[in-house]
Image (cartoon, rainbow, N blue to C red):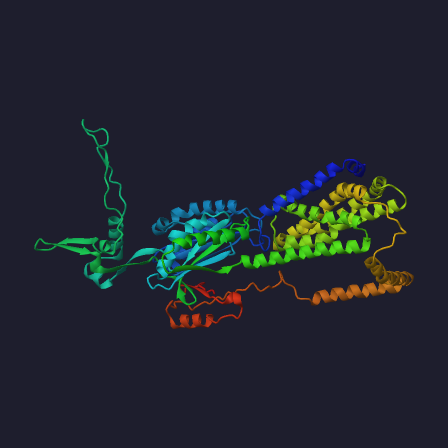
Length: 625
C-alpha cells in the first residue's frame, strides 16, 4: 500500500516535503503583492486633442467617428467618453473581468486606426493615443520649490522631461502621468483688429508659422556622381524649427507692394503677441496651496506593488541628487503603506494562529514527540500553498493570506488523526513501524474522503460569476489547494514520521505538574459535556426543536445585518470632488472659495498634506485632494 511504500522509504517522503517547501519559498519571493486580487474590470483609454475646438465640435468630428468604430469591440462591457471645451477628448473602454488587457488594447487600437481617416487634420497631427489604463494610482510624487523661479510650468516640464521616461522604464510600472500646467509651448495671441486691418485671417498666421518653422532636409554637397577631384562630401545644415520668441515674432505673414513700389511686410509681431508659455492652461496642480507638479504612478496588474513602490522611491531619491538647488520632492500619496500594514497584520495573525494550534496540540496530546508530527505539517502545507498560488497565477493579498490563516486549523486535522491512530496501535503493543502501517490501512480512505469534502465545500465559490467570483476565487482555491497538499503530506510524510519518532509510553509514568493541572481542569468539563450529550440524545425531539429555533433565528438575524462588498477601512487619505457650473473660469471667485473650503485639514496624521488638481470647468471636471 501507499503508506507502507513511504514508511519503508523515509528518504523519499522527506524529499517530497522538502521539495514542496523549496517551491513555496521560491514562490514567496516572486509572487506579486497587493491588497486585493484584480477585481476591477480592465480598461483601455483613447485620448486625443483638437486645439481650439469646443465640446460640441469634438463630439461631432472626433467622438462620433471613433466611438462608431470602437463600439462592440470583443469582450467590451461599456464605454464612456468625455469631450471638453479646451479640445481634449478621452474615451474609456471597460472590458469584462479577466480579459487579457494586452489583447484588448490591440483590438481597440485597430478599431481606432479605422477611424483615423475620418478625423480632422489637426487631430491626426496631434495623434490619437491608445493605451492600457489602470484604475488605481499606486503613488503620487510631487515636485515643489520655494524658489519663485521654479513656477508650476517649470516643475511640470522638469517632471515630464527628466523624470517621466526614467520612471516609466522601471519594472512593474504600467503608466506614468504628469499633472501640472503642461508642456512648454510658444503661445501666439492674435489681435482681431490688426488682422482685420491687414485683411488676414487666423489660418493665414497659422499657415505662415507652420511653413516657416519646420525641420527640412537640405541634402548634401559633393555626393556621387561628382566632378573628378572632389575630396569632401558635406551635409548641409539649415535653420529649421524656431525656438525663440524673437524668431517667431519675425515670421513674415504677408508681403504687399504699395502703389509707390515699396513693399509692405506684415510680421507676426504686427498682428499678435508672442510669449513662451504652456501648451494649455486647462489644469493646474498645487501642493499645500503652492504651485507644484504631480507624477502619478500606475502599476502593471501582475506586478508586485511593494517592489514597484520601493523601486520608484529609490529611483526618485537617486534623481533628486541632480535636482536644481531649491527643488524638492515628496510622496504624499502612497497606497502601499496601507497594503504593507494589512499584509503585516495578516502575517502576524498567521504566525499567532500557527502558534496557538501547536500549543493546543501539545496540551491535548501531552506528548512532545506526537506534537512534532502535526507541527511539521504547518510549514510544509502553508509554505507549499504559495507554490500552488504561483501555479494558479494568484498574488499574495489579504484574501489569500486569510485563507492560509483559516487553513492552519484544517491542515493539522489529518496529521492529528494519523498520530492518534498510530498511538492507539502502539498502546496495543505494536512497534511504531507496524503501528504506522496498520493505522494508515484504516485511515487512508477517511483522509481522502475528508479532503474531497473540504474541497467540495470551497470549490463552488471559485465558479461565482462577476466581480464577486473574481474576488473570492483565490480565497476558495487556496484553501482547496492547501487541503490537497495536507492530504498528500498525511499519506506520505506523517506515517513515516510516526514510525521514526513515536515511542511506547509507560502508562505508570507520572505526568508533569502542567499536564496534571490541565487534566484536573479538563476532565470535569469533559464529564459534564458527556452528560449533556446523553440528555440531548434522550430528548432528541426537544433538541431538534431547539436546533430549528436557532436556525430560524440565525436566518432572521442574517436578513437584519447590513451588506456590503468589502468592509470600510480607513486608509489615511480623503478624496473630494467638486464640479463648477458650466462656463466658470479657473480664476473665478466661486472656484477659489471652493478651494478654500477644500483646504480644511483632517486631524489624521496621514492627511496633513493637501493636493489639489484643477481642470478647466468643463462638464465632468473635478477637484481632488
